[in-house]
Length: 508
Image: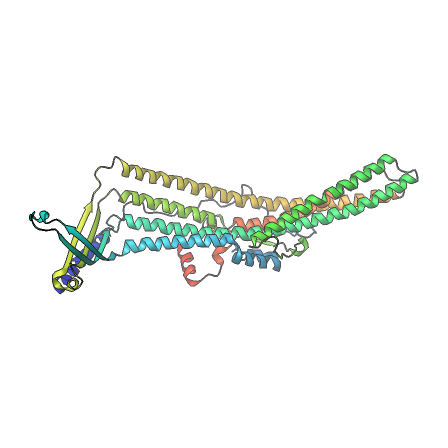
């Protein structure tokens, strides 16, 4: 028994040595070696140069903002709005929302799939087998037709080892594809974090805007009802017609009708905010947001165009899919070449349990097999062409993702500039409308004003206040959209040492 064990060990040792030599000689794997796409050679995001700073206005959210090209973005960019409630909600959401939790679980799945395939690629497969059987055979099978049948039991205990040589790199290309899937899912996690934090900031800004619009609408309702009483008194004194009274009643009713849609939108926004942070709307205890509580960041860090491709999670995820498609071309190519497998087994076979451990019961085998595809009806070459087509599709998708990312940044930069100008103009419009209403109201109270002018002034004032609240909110929303479009600074987040090493390696 000992001699057979040594012989099998030496045979397996030689086989594994052959495997190592084969792998060493196959350092140049078949299939394309993936190269990261070059960053686009563009120097500006927009076709026309942006001003050094935006327009400013003397109102909440109206400060001028400066563009700081090449400056780093903080991983906690939302803290620049200087609102502790927003910061707390985002921290709660990142910990409790199911969206990042699902992304993290998918990432763990991809990592385990990689580990599982790595085990079969880098190590021989060993299995232990223990079996027992009982059977009855005819003696005629052994040339003894007159002998009675033989009944016996057979015990088998063995260990088998197998290893497939990755001569042409197909297995390593599979690992490369699986590693790319891990990278893809990791960037999907970052994208989930970024989208969630940006959505919370945007929802908070939306709530603040709606509260300002509600306040403006309530004030104009109070004013319109006050003017209604004034018109009714003038009617009693003969200074106003019944038609003017009815018109003012309709005006006041219309202002009141504008209130429920705003209240509805506010409730829906808070429900959405509750879901973002991972709580049920009926159980959420959310803070209230107003525009006066928000601080508009005055310095806006703008990443260089050459850096955007390494910072946007969607671009990195698309690049990972391109890498996986490239590796699959290598897998399909390797399948055209021979596959060599080494196997060996060592065990015992005996009729009784006592005999199973004897030297005479030992059995062993060593084998090597090679499979070379000869004719598959064009299957393997067609699969390789399909893999190449898949790579071409992934390359086109990467290009599309890249173009959309640069468009996204350009759109936000244009919005930052134009919305700042809009807010400055809207501040002037609101002040002019308020002054016009106050003047026509005094004139009407004195009996020298025109009711039609008063009616127009009311409508202009109400619309100007609503537009001002929306313009203020747009400045905050544009700023949040800018940080999101530039990637959100995830690469500057403090991570465990292992993850930091991965990020540094990938950013090289």
